[in-house]
Amino acid sequence: MSTTEPQPVAVADVDTFTVTRTIHIDAPRDRVWLALTHEDHISSWFGDTATLPDRRVGGEGVFGWADHGDIPVRIEEYDEPAVFAYTWGAVGQPLLPENSTLVRFTLDADGDATRLTVVETGFGTLTDRDPRTELDEHRKGWTSELDELVAHLERDLDGDLGLDRAAVGTARPA
Image (cartoon, rainbow, N blue to C red):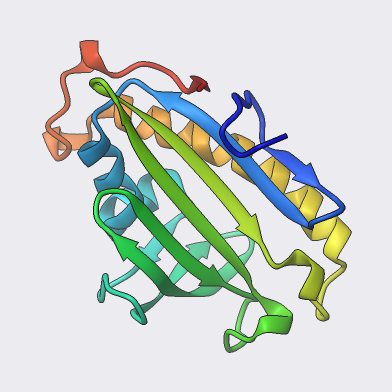
């Protein structure tokens, strides 16, 4: 399955150790970009806390979950508003190829909506965790997390996103 086909849930490819999901979001691309890249929005849909003070290639931060701990992240690609990619790793460990994966978001405008694709790679090089278990866990994670992203966009928290609620719908296959 290519990364551009509709996917109501994330798909794990055990041959390439890749997780992919493409969805259609009824929100403009710049609003989806904001929700993906700004820490106050990230922590509203992805985990419990987010610290990403340096939003440029090489910038480092932390995504935190009360039940999992703090996970280090490093921005690998930042091409506003089209591509955002980061490496993330294991709780309390430096980011190394053997303990981290690469998450890449691609945002394509689709009229007043956005086609969002997430691809996570690098599971095959993990040595500190079972790659197949991680692949399956992240497949489940991207299914629920992208649904939470859409819910965040729908909430229009404190008007920060400046969204017209009528123009924001649900995540659906692209």
